[in-house]
Length: 404
Image (tube, rainbow, N blue to C red; front, top):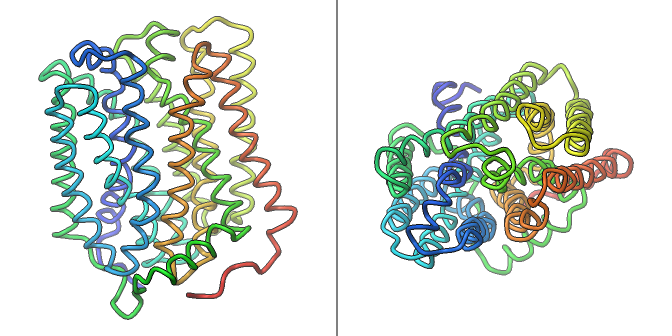
């Protein structure tokens, strides 16, 4: 079936929508000290603005896909991006840390719509290897955001201070809303939509969240991402305190990290249809395991120093990008008529874990580079164990839910 929108435009738009979530985090990481000084807050209070963003982000991704199952994908994306623009302006005008927390929480409420609904759009439009290829290409473009975001943030600070970062995010939300209104087709026709009924929804959520195949694959994906994201969340401590970098030098970490993700996504797209999904995931775990081993060795044997303390990062994200498209699609395929709801649950698991890492795990381990390496290794190992569980016990079972 031909796409109703040019492939490059669809790829770029879905990637940009998915990138809103991480872009809202990475852009302002270099200015934590400035925010603390201007708002009279401690470093920990500024760090908690991440948790203020990610906790409602995780809660709301449970609903973005479900609402899009009922109202359509396009409408949800447009409204969410308009609300995101308004909440970004609230952050830009914050006069104390509590106001910033509130603005970040409102951002979190709507920022996840692009990530969740975009996954459902991919599966609405394409199937099989074509869907995996599009998901890989979306990830490839999406992967550029974490590298660009802190660089953009550093440049904006020099021009208009830290508030200009949130003004830029407001502009981004507005541009995406207008782009969706002008070019994004509705991928879910009215006859395929699901009504919002409390009892039916409760049953549907329960069915998804207790389904072994879905939970195992989605849990593995969330843990893999957290193994890398713990460094993003700890970037001010890791890069500025341990490695002694300035706010405009975050590219030392983000550029190679994202390069690994982009190359891994390219390889994943090329191998779609040639490699089985199981092989793609297993290959990704082999690469991530090697990166974790390198990181633990370097962190144990050497003091924090460039470039050795960053060697693991592009290797890890390369492996993560190999595994993630297959994990994502295999989990969504458990619920062919509730892909929006399933994508919401998938996003909830991922962002809920990230919020936990931001609020609890990262502050526990960021005192040393070895602590961070152990934290990342533990998360990756847990994801690998879930994949092994799926391979050994669940891969051959017919446990997908009946359509609802």
